Image (cartoon, rainbow, N blue to C red; front, side, top):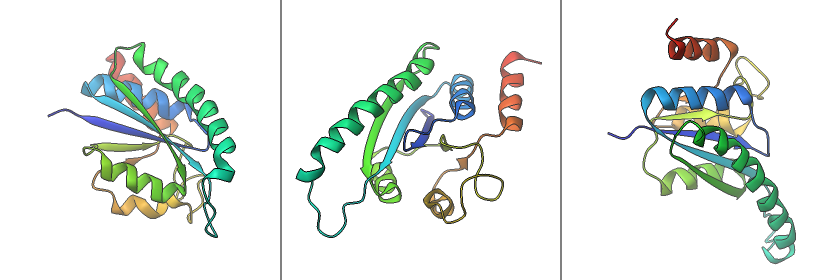
Length: 156
């Protein structure tokens, strides 16, 4: 069975710890990695796409650069990497993305060091709300997890 990891970023926030952890875990598990950048842009009050087209094009350009930089760190190690960008309401775009893809064995939060119980993501943040509904584990990366996987990879 092919092992697949999903690393989720939000609004250009990239945790280096999460990127390193995902890389090392993927190497250890011989897995594919998908990088998903979610950018919040509400389409409320019946607003249409046309007035936001310029903003969307700018977001696509900026996020392409961010995702390219992140994926290059994984590609250097010989990993299979794919990237995706979704613009809209993050929770909705996250669920739509998952519905279109084969299952992932782990989702790693890539925009902060810790979840609401332990860190800077507020308890009402969408990722905290969806965590219990996922079919696979949702991880965040702390210094402890990062040191653990790095020591496993180095054999110490």
